[in-house]
Amino acid sequence: MQTCAAVVSSFDHPPRYEAFDFPAPADPDQAVVDVLATGLHPRVRSGASGRHYSSTGRLPMVPGIDGVGRTTEGRVVYFVADDDLPGSMAEQTVVDTRRTVPLPDGTDVVQVAAAMNPAMSAWVALRRRVPIRPGQSVLVLGATGNAGRMAIQVARLLGAGRVVGAGRNAEVLAGLGADATVALTDDAGATAAALAEQAAEVDLVLDYLWGAPAAAAMVPLLRARSDRSRALDWIQIGSVAGPTIELPSVVLRSANLRIQGNGQGAVSTRAYVEELPALVEEIGSGRIAIATRTERLADVERVWTEPDEPGVRTVLTPDVRS
Image 1 (cartoon, one colour):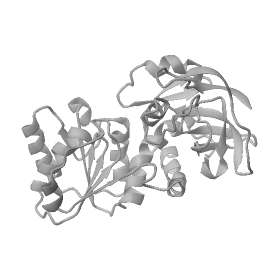
Image 2: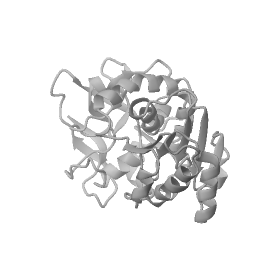
Image 3: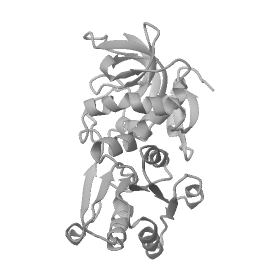
């Protein structure tokens, strides 16, 4: 099956819009869909550059990890791309029907394509990794990014009693809807004091930063806790600030700090798929929202190199939809 797609032929060059030979469905659980919308997520960029930990290094490839498509029977579905099949950035693609969720008539397909991936990180973290209990408090580290902004909405929706947002862009923090905010500045002392004041008693941390900001936040948070034996669950989700941290051993011995990750491998594919219908419903109802920018799939090479607008997720479609 040949279709037009965003094709990566070199990890050093953006995808080009060109013809690509897709495999035909190989078993009854696979089907062809016309792609209606697919999100240009950071995870998609890292996969297309060969830097993601799940990358096989094989080229050429079609990027894209999820999207909204129309089946040959006319049903509109959200789908998660199969690791063994080309991705979603194509006019048509082959999907595993077990990784699809039907969408109600009238669903905004651009919103679903934009929101599912960034919302899924916090949703699965708080339902599968460390299930949140009603009234618990959450610190979102990296709250001004797309996923961090959505994590605030998700935490609130899932029953958090208090949400603290911490991020670099102080102007943006005030409008995120968190109960309290902390600006992560170059003044290490002031940042530590603010974290200790606003977030010392949180129950869970959703960490989209890692690197130096995470290492700098752990010590003041733990030192300021009224009861260090009370568990602090640190869920590592993203690493935009760096892939490693320097963590003194005393941090782990002097407090009940529990660190775990949330991502491919930490949670099974089956568990992710089981969470899809509920999250689709929340996004479709408007209870979880994200700002979007829609571009033509045919313009992928240009769009790929343009800087992301803060708080806005780019969605590619076969033609521009408002």
